[in-house]
Image 1 (cartoon, rainbow, N blue to C red):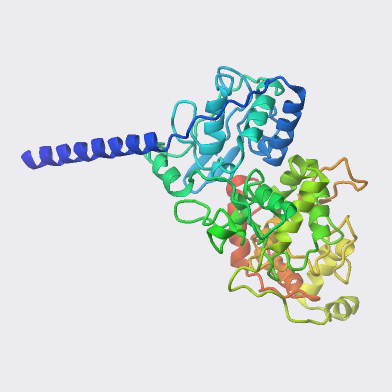
Image 2 (cartoon, rainbow, N blue to C red):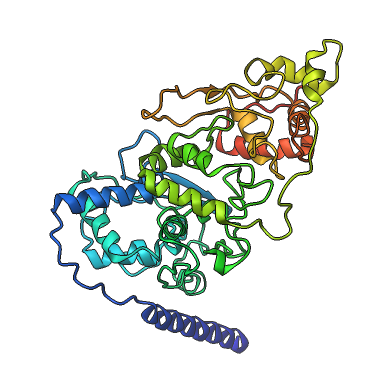
Length: 451
């Protein structure tokens, strides 16, 4: 009994010390109050600037549920330990940010500190927003408090179980992985390149998807100066967010003009946006100025290859087109491609520019990891809606009715065909993605049929 009492007292003392240390750390991490911007929040020019900042930061994509009201929250964000739901950021006083003054708003966006002092879950990309200047944050605050319609919608609690849902340990996460930091322009780059660097690292928060995560779910690098893994590609929500670096399976095959075209319209003559990137184009990048898009493209094209990854592919001659045109060719991959793919993507794998993406020379196809190719083959996909283009938003049907073996055969055929050089896809890889999708979409078929 005495030993039990001693253990309980020791545990209680440790808990008190941990709480005291966390409180002390949280006090030390409190940011300095912002300087008075000295601008009227109802200034139309300020509000318009804030709306543009909201577009560059893609606020609507995460804070709007499918079919929901803009910025009212409720979008589910799956994590390995449960779902987090985005919050209401309309100016409703009871359920949104109507009670936030500017310093509280700034603390939430830039430092991940909630109105009540608790730390926000890092699903909110405040490690990236940390470099945003006060002028932009103040304009953003003006837009949300003066131009966004208030919506009374209570925030949904996360499904993360106790004790993993406790927020006080996030103070330590914030201290380790979300430091207070200004934007650091590169003295070796001109103003255009540094503008691109700022947009990519800051409001665009490209690293949130395209930089791998560490053991604490932190981005392993917040800038190129921070580490070689920056923008080197990552797996997110079942999609492979490609490397944005200069290697063969990154952006080596893209021109600067193609990157601008892709961000502005969601397509080029060879590729089309799909998955989460289609939402980014729809809600964010297509609204950016031509100058900002060019700055992003120029900066991305300046990034070197990820260390250890090939900068270019060796030359490879296309022999597959002749194989597909030869009616006597009866390999399993050729037969499946003819039946399910060739009508849109053509025997030469070139597709139809800006309508049906090419499969030959498409960096999404020859990525080292096939997760995205598997997912879009199972689920299908739709190009982003973009009223600013003269091309319809074409859709690809899903092929979840095919077996894991058949989808592996088709994708292996495509990823190694024409001039592509990528590893084959196994049935197990397809099965894993199918299981993941089934957990999100219960009506997806099991795919256990094989003809």
